[in-house]
Length: 431
Image 1 (cartoon, one colour):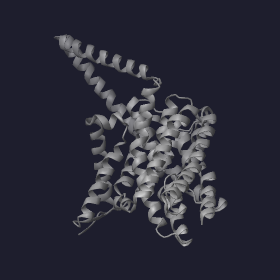
Image 2 (cartoon, rainbow, N blue to C red):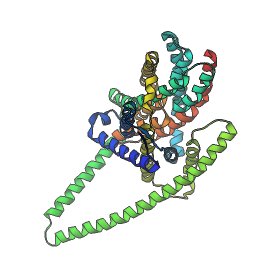
Image 3 (cartoon, rainbow, N blue to C red):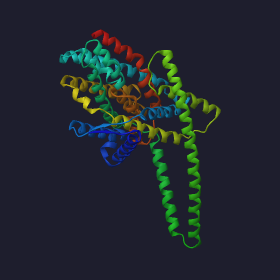
Image 4 (cartoon, rainbow, N blue to C red):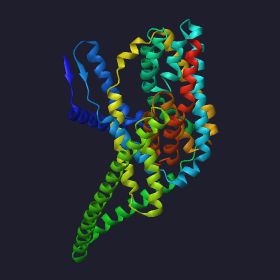
């Protein structure tokens, strides 16, 4: 039986799964403790259900994920809106260090892949597919380089590459936040502003308690005055909600306009450079430029709270769509030797992230956040990196702005300056 969900049905299901993932993270201790992103929880469970229905010949489910790309572009636009010049300047050195780490990972993934392939007696080309092509490159590079390898005479290269990408996507989503959490505990990393936030919460709780106590103790005219005060407060809150709506609407209009401008810029850059750039690159660049010009000229009042709210929803929505549409049956094509290669790849990136990258980045909260992202895109894709960082930051209540600027810029765009030529060179070397 074939079940086809249209755009509305697929989107509604994604929201339900996202909400279910958030609920599970609040109720199940280890999900929050190890920083497993909510979209991964809900989306991955649905992908397993689809696999079970397919393998038992009960049903095959087709999804319409048309909104995945617009939601992804919207999210990266919000990341650009957070890119103030001051933040970028502070991250200058870290950006270079992180980029070198990304390039080193891409190089080592192919070295490990080719070396392990020779050790277990399979074609080195398949080791490349289970290296930088399928892991750092994700499904995009797998779909691009797999057919090229098959045209060179290596049968099954596309299947190996796509299966490796699927494996990496799942592993990276599961291990990124977990590793960052381990680093914080192991190195006693100080959480910025955590004490201040807790202090504000305590003060707010005390004030609320005193207000309730005072209201209960008040009688007669005092009680009436307390009720009147509550009513006035309610009116003020209503006005605040209206103002908040206006701020949210302003941010939505700005994001939509930047997405359009970014799409045009991205197409133009692709024509000029001859490179196929991710759909969100143009929007992110335009958003960074707009943010800094707007800070100087004051065209619009951008609500940081509204931007963060939109960012959180769009990230959760499009990543849930991506996870729930995973073709888990592709993992069945991973034979014993390829599983061994991928296990070694996972062990290497974990060791590299913990022993080298974290230390190079300063062994602080920003470094731990970037490690979560490094593992996410090093074995999967940029969206998974950002979901890992979001889950990790949400646990501690502090957002690492530098990490959210550096990781997508280096891990999704600049890394290909070395990774793509390196992949091509390796394929020609063993082909």
